[in-house]
Amino acid sequence: MFKKHILTFVSSLILLSINAQTGSLPVINIETKNHQPITSKTLYVPGEYFIVDESNPNNNLGSADRPMALEIRGRGHSSWKGIKKPYKIKLGEKAPLLGMNKHKHWALLKFYEPTVAGMHLGEIMGMDWTPSTKPVEVVLNGDYLGLYLLTETNRIAKNRLNIYEQPNWNEDESSIPYGWLVEVDNYYEPNSISIIENNKWNMRITYHSPDSLSAAQKSWLVNEFEDMNAAIYDVDKENSTWEQLIDVDAMARYFIIQEVLDNSDGFHGSFYLHKDWTDDARWVAGPLWDLSCNQRIKTDYTFNMKTSYGFTPHWIGELIKDEDFCLAIRRAWDEFYPHYIQTWMEYIDEHLLLCSEAYEHEKIRWNYTNQETLEERVAKLKSALLANIEWFNNNLPGKSGVGLVDVPEITKVEFINISGMRSSEPWNGINIKVVTYDDGSVTTTKVMME
Image 1 (cartoon, rainbow, N blue to C red):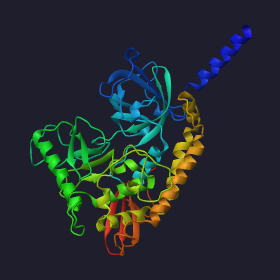
Image 2: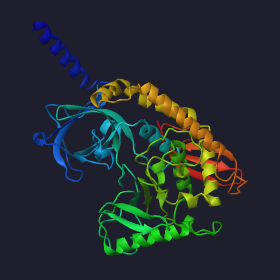
Image 3: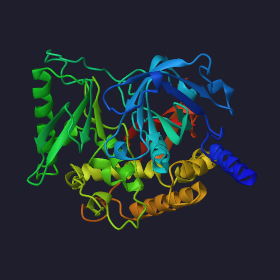
Image 4: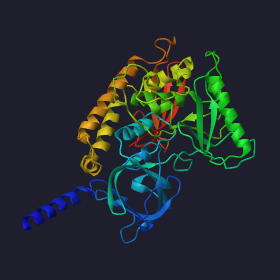
C-alpha cells in the first residue's frame, strides 16, 4: 500500500513538472475576476496579469503581488473551435510588452512556426508595417496553457499602422476616401460589405477602421470596391486603371510573400488593405496576418493549386495577367533574391529553436499525436520555404505567358537610418531602402532589421 502511494506521488510530481511553465521563455500569468471562464469572442472578461522573463528581467511587468489590469476574450474563427484557444487581450494601460511598441491591444495566437517566419519576411520585403510577435508561455487562472505567440494586432495607431484614421459615422464626403483599414474576409461579420467579384463568387470586405459606418461611408466603400474590381477585371490589361486605385509595388510584394510561404489563404482571408490620406492615396496591401505554409511540392502559383478545402483566390488571377504587375513582382524579387535568404533562415532558427523546451511541454499539455521535435519541424519548414523560393525564381511572372522581356537591372542599393545616415548594408532598426535601376528609376521601401 505504501509503495502504491509513493508511485502515485511520484507520478503526480512528474505530471506537475510537465504541466508547468519551463521558464525558458517569458511567462504571462493571467487571472480573470473570480476565475471566470473565457467563452465569448465579443465580451471581455476583466482580470489581471503579470509577466516574468527569467532570461531578461527588463521585460518583467507587474508581479504576483502587484498585477496589472487587463480584459480578455476569445478570438479567431476556425482556431476558436479547437481545444486550445487563441485570445485577444486589452490592457488597462498601454505597455511595451516584451520590448515591442507600447499599446493596449494584443493577441495571444497559437504557436505556429510559419507565423514567425512569415511576419519577418514581411519586414524584409518592406511592407508598410508588419506585426511583431514574441513566443511566450501562458498560465491562465493557474492552468498552464502552453506555448503562444504574443502578437501586435492590426490597428491604425502611432505605434502600429501609422496612417490617418477616419472617424466612425463620418458624413464629410471630402474626407471619407481616406484613413481606412479593411480585410477581404471569408467569414460573415456584422461590420462587412459584399460585392459581386465575377460570375463565380462574391467578395466580402470587413471594415475594421472605421468600424461603424454612416450611410455615406458605406455607400462610398461599396462603390470604391466595385470600381477597383471592374478595373482589375478590365480585359484591356495594357491600359488598365486599377494602378490608379491600388499600389502596384505593395501588391507585388504581398504576392511574393504568399508564394514563398505557399499560403493558400493569401488572397482569400485575412487579406488586409489600407489607405492613408496623401495626394496620391491608393489602397496598399497589408498588414500581414494569419500566415501559413502548405509544405507541399510546389508545381504552380499557389492560387492555382488545389487544397483540402475550397477557397476563392480574389483578384490575383486577373492581376497576374497585367504586365505592370509582373514587372513590379520581378523588380521586388530582384531585391530579395538571393540576398536575404540566408539571413532569413538564420532568423527562423534563432527565434524558433529557443522555444524547443517549451514546445516539449506544449506537446504533452495538448496531447499531440505528432511527436516531432521542434528542431525537426523547423528543418522541414525551412526546406519547404527554400524549395518554394527556387520554384518561384524559376517561374517568375513575365518570363512566359505574359511577354515581359526587359526588366531594369539594379545598379545601387542604399539603406538610410532614422538619423539620415547612408550605408550599403542595412542598419539595425528602421531603414529606408533606396534601390536605383539602370533605367534611372528608383524605388524606396521601409524595412525593419533586427
